[in-house]
Amino acid sequence: MHHSFHDVVDVDVDPTQALVAEQGWQSWSPSDSYRVDQRPPRATTENLHRLCYRGDREMDPGVFRSHGVMAVQHHVFGPVTVIAGRDPRNVVPEIRAELREDRVVVSADAPVDVTVDHGPDGVDGALARWADRVANEARVGDVPAAPTVWCSWYHYFTQVAESDIDENVKAVKDLDLPIDVIQIDDGYQAEIGDWLTPSDRFASVPGAFARIHDEGFRSGVWTAPFFVGARSVAFREHPERLVKDAAGRPLVVGHHWDQQIHALDTTHPSSQEWLTEVFEWFNQIGLSYHKIDFVYAAAVEGVRHEDVDGIAAYRQGVQLIRDVIGADRYLLGCGAPQLPSIGLVDAMRVSPDTEPHHLPNGDDMSQPSIHAAMVTGRARAYMHARFWSNDPDCIIARPAIERRHDWAAHIGAFGGLRASSDRLADLDEWGLATTRRLLSEVPTAPFIPT
Image (cartoon, rainbow, N blue to C red; front, side, top):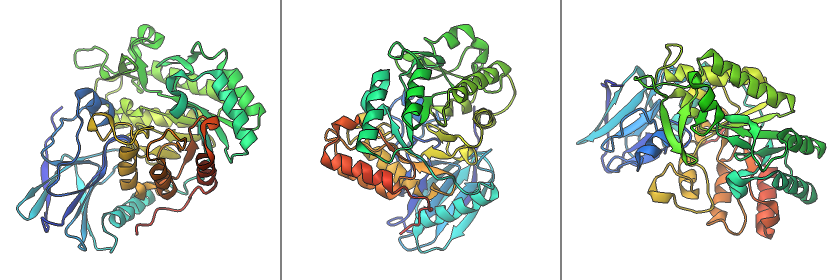
């Protein structure tokens, strides 16, 4: 789809000092402030462009590109011009900027408001004040306190087994860690899209959750509710539920788990019945915490049952999940369009995944790594306790983690949702003490720039 851009403002800058702050489209899309002579990171492959960026837009490395809001700091101690969509939950303009001599020329493909912020605290302060206004207009209200979590992902990954959950539930009790929720991540299900069919490593998903409850914990689960894998029964038996391309074929939104991935059409009655069935089943077995992942898929541009744009389809899908689980169950978004999620989720992953290694594979800043998660998580600190609780991703503190001290310091400074994701038996004295400390001091107040 072609998007036409219109110039909206020229900002006079000192080219040796000015900064441009980019906001990425979804959780994993890089966000940071850059000097005007820098080239911000872009996807290194077409598949990563689809999975981690705004994949239905072109990749243009030659200009700054931001989704929904951009900030331009004129010089080191100067004012900050904020360019932002007027209704960022429903319309997320793509905002571009390029340096021309001593001006930053900004254009957008949808209406924006331009404000000049004269606060003393630079880009962070200007974005925090913008976020306060957006949250107020959206009537976000008080962000609920985040639970503390143990999550299976960062040790067991997709190979998690029922016995692994039992082992770590016992360890949480033996170590007396301050954890509220035990969350089973990717791997309990037979296939991506077949959420109610267990993998061969789980004799009974309800049984695993029942034992969590018997030990006095609340339970949580991971789903990618808008993803349908090509190997799944859901894909074979229900093609009507998929977003289509212009030729009427199921749209491919990426390649992951060694298969093509398709998007659920959240506007189709059959999809809505399926989502309702899945999340009502989770309600019945007592789940109180949901991590919904890769949810950007509902927002891709394509052909749907209802003639609505991707953002409207996305909000419709997440709102349906929220309606089914109820307001009192905790909802964490991940791989999620950031601004369209305002008012829909309790917590939001605001960065790429962390990972046991420090630098991202292939130098793509959307990819799992401690460095990429720290950079984008820091740039989005202003969102915490304004839009939701910021999820910086999990605490991983075992000795095998590269630069684990740096990662722990990042979570201590910017982590609003705290989740441990080590095999607890692998923690040494420092790792256990650090995990205990981070789980014990969860912040609730908004980030104040310094």
